[in-house]
Image 1: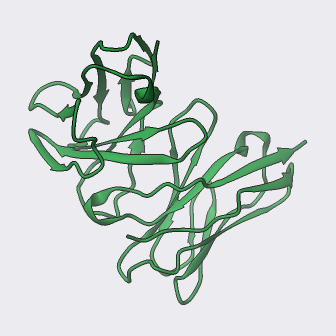
Image 2: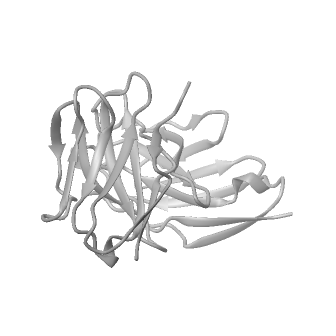
Amino acid sequence: DAKTTQPNSMESNEEEPVHLPCNHSTISGTDYIHWYRQLPSQGPEYVIHGLTSNVNNRMASLAIAEDRKSSTLILHRATLRDAAVYYCTPPNTGNQFYFGTGTSLTVIP
Amino acid sequence: NAGVMQNPRHLVRRRGQEARLRCSPMKGHSHVYWYRQLPEEGLKFMVYLQKENIIDESGMPKERFSAEFPKEGPSILRIQQVVRGDSAAYFCASSRTGTPNQPQHFGDGTRLSIL
């Protein structure tokens, strides 16, 4: 099963861009890279997912390395509401997602 | 357009009692997943169900835990004879199809406390 490596924590100033990295060197060739975030006392919230090309949606952008061994979630302008734990997770067999400890993002006003 | 609904949000049980956690998937979703999150840890997969079928229960403890997703009604995660170590947040997710690359949509969880 694919596993991931993320920094434990990161800080950003409000209204500045944030780049959250993730290594997933064992990902298989057909697995999408998914990103979720979890606010305190809430369930994980889907953010974005992609396969090979960079992806954009209203929440964030996802930059995927050419060799697919790493990816970066980009929040273009961090707000206080973006403070959360961010997980990158390729799906394992059986449709389950592997959630490690993620990156705890602190946004400084 | 309701999301994944879980109830109750908080559940307190004494050791030895039974706990029943309910999950109603998003409209149009027929695939349900249960995860458990211990304090200060990430979510751990427990079981994946489709209507009336258990597809993957590789993350379920072998004893005391069971799950179902009947043709009508919510999915139920049942824990018999609860112990202190069962205290955790239990999250349910749903997806429209069962392909591995479908995003899963999560409820806000049931926080189970065992006295």
